[in-house]
Image (cartoon, rainbow, N blue to C red):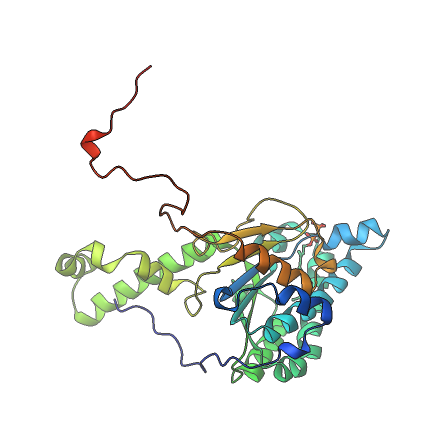
Length: 300
Ligand code: FPP
């Protein structure tokens, strides 16, 4: 099986809109190293309910305020030329475990967000796309989503990906099903059995990490360099599990509705202070023993 083809999409074109940052944002941006900017930031937007609860407001007002934060953060991302921003907007678990009334509200909010922000996205050169089991969402929501992605498809700035009805384990299951289905289709096309097909190249050649990566919803994007989680919870909640193998994680106590562009820049500053090792030895990791036979294991 060949690796899955990506549809032709316009290449990312950086532009110079730094002057549109607020003075506070600019102060943080000036501390950043332009050569070490992340290519992909993914955010677990959490704390809408608690933000509302702290103000004795209904939960839906927290979500509404959260939608405002989405637009602010997206605009800052475009101004600093971030190629990919992925937002966890609605998980499979949210869909299954939240009261129907809240799920319906979130769906309405998504539609109204898209309807009222597509012009702004075009002004900001943002391309909209989605990951998740989109086909399970209500048809009127899917229609609006499709309209928004088609209306922004030719933009060449930040790609904004909304994870909707998304769960990482089910994404991996879907990817495995795709790989197997493609193999069966290829065997069928060649008039042989799957067993015969695998006997030619061996399973190792036909199914490796690249094949899984190429069948994930995120196949058009680099893995995230940085995952941000708001509201202080130190967990990943079934978000991009495969893709974040070497991603830096930044947790802030701030609730999502209080998170803005400046906080995105602060998270990037924190990211730049880290040493990424990808399993190798760090700069202060001690001396390497060249001859392993010289190493004695101390037994006490
Ligand atoms: C978590 O807050 C947030 C969500 C479940 C949904 C995220 C939705 C938005 C940010 C608004 C709409 C988004 C778009 C793209 C229009 P929570 O309800 O789990 O908060 P809690 O943990 O404090 O209860």
